[in-house]
Image 1 (cartoon, rainbow, N blue to C red):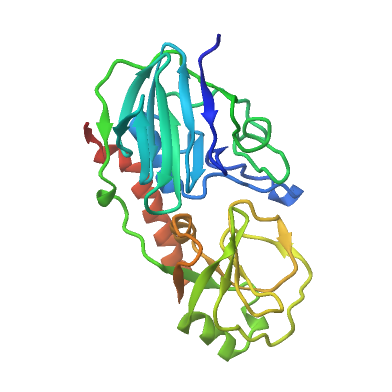
Image 2 (image 1 turned 90 degrees about the vertical axis):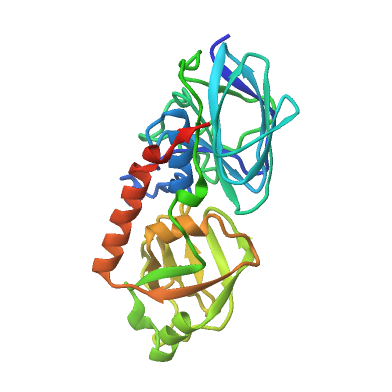
Length: 315
């Protein structure tokens, strides 16, 4: 048998994700990719992989795996309950497991998403340069969809390297809050002054209509000035669409490639990643940011990801 992990039980929304399918949105193909690149990079750092290496993204609940290779080094980022062969284990550290051992990833104790990485990554053929899963279109991942019981996840390595295990203290990672920074535009002129002021003065709740494609929010209505239909144009990550209801919709990693509602602004990338850890019912606020400050925030986020390996300590 080739090196693999066998899925003994699958969480409701577990998919393979990496850095995303970049460069194809103009052809109508969603980028997909990890909702929280920081947590993806953390799991990969723990097992010695580059930051964007493909891993399993879990939402609220994880999976159970059996090792079907000589040995494998594994790690989970995110505050999920873990068991190895029935014994409690910890996230945010690496483990070397051997053939026949079982890893159970339970419920998220806080936050919403975590990542399960394996040393060397998964031996899954990329689609358009990425193994990221876009389940709505059946592109990428393992058979184009969510993981399911009895799936075999092929591994790039059949043995874990001989080295000590590592730990990462999440408290040493970038702090993130409930306020999302927004760069106004490209259609902020479709809203009244009062409408723009409402966006930044109000608190909004994440509704139950929240997935990788988008989050619908509930709160004060945002007033349009020119109606709520535009000629469909490109949909950037983090776009804040305002349909006729006046309620914001945040467009996320599995978003459609174009849309016809005006976009009052765009949530910057680092704060989209923070949104990945927020659950329905949680409250968020928005604050304005200028282009230069947004660019610096993105650079700082990239530096944080690059420096995660320097924050590892012996387990």
